[in-house]
Structure formats: structure tokens, C-alpha cells
Image 1 (tube, each protein chain N blue to C red):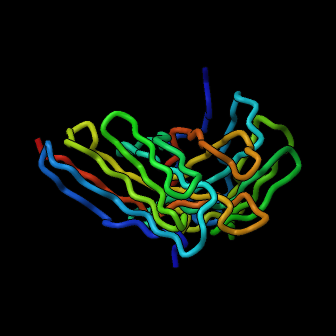
Image 2 (image 1 turned 30 degrees about the horizontal axis):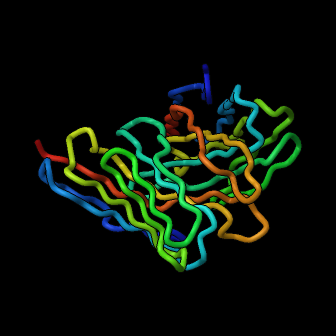
Length: 115
Length: 113
């Protein structure tokens, strides 16, 4: 079982470059989300999606774009990378409950450094 | 400011000691989740609490949600080095009408052998 797969695991960018972090899940989960984790800050929600074609902003959406064209994939795009976006990024997915998203399944993380 | 406050931020205990981590929200919690993260890895789900007064246990870890559903605690009995890591509480539904699923700042636990 693959679960939640994130690529790449490591990436170094120069300021101003663009890139896409890929996230794929094979559990047919409706809910998918992206977080960033910085020292002392816990996980902060960037964007989330409750199904194909539906996305919404989280706590820290500026500088990031997402789309959800299929149930399986939820890519995160950095349009013009900035040093403040240096972080570890986690993708997560879950089934949707009657109220809320329930247990999240996480990918292994993508470590991004912006110089 | 964080909608979910966790305390303490870090904890160092001797093996065999008990410990408690707290998670507090200014709003009523609909779903409260506890996760553990080993350093440099993804998060692993521990427990979910939804009802006021609910208590769940798994091995030596017990989580409780207060009656008002604004505070949760995670208690580890007779800690072991394998309990070391970062513990995070998470909650969804704090903002009505959305599925925003947010986390506290985490508690870093070290267990000395």
C-alpha cells in the first residue's frame, strides 16, 4: 500500500524560481491538504480540498497555488519562491466524515530550501 | 495567535515517569485529534475524541476531552524512550462551515534512559 506519496523529498531553489510539489494518494480519500512545518510553529495549513474541483485557503495560503483535477492528486505550486518559504511541507489525506475530516494520513514530507 | 495552544512546548523526563501534555482551544472542539511525529518524519495518528468527557487509551497513552470540549490532555504512564518525539493536537470544524484542520504548536518530548 503506497498511502500518501510526496515528491520530491528534497529540493533547493533560488529566489524567484517556480516549482511544484507533488502529492498522490491511493486510498480514494475525498479530503487532501498541504501543511508547512517550521521550527516552533507546529503545522500550518496552506490549502485544502474536499474533492475534485474544490479547493480552499488555509491559514497561510499566500505564495502558493493548488488545484485538484482528480481525487488522487493534489499538487502544490510555488509561483515565485522566496526564502521565507524554506520549510518542510507535508501532504495529508482522509475520508470526509459527517462532520470533519477524521484521521489524517500523512506523506513523508518534502524539505524545501530557497536560497 | 494560534487557535490551538499546547503546553508545555518541550518536556524532558526520566524513563518510567508519568507526564501530561495539554491542548486548549478558545472555541468548542468538534473533533480533537492527537498525533505523534518522530523527528524528521511524518505524523502518525494516535487518537480521536469527539464527545465531552470522552477518554480513550492505547497502550500507555490516555487522551481526555473535557466536558466543555475546549481542552484535551494526553497522559503517558511509565514513559519509555520509544515515546520520544513531537506530540501535536489537531482540530477541525473550529471555523464553522469549513473543513480547516489545524494543529497546535507541538510538544517536544525527550525521555532519558
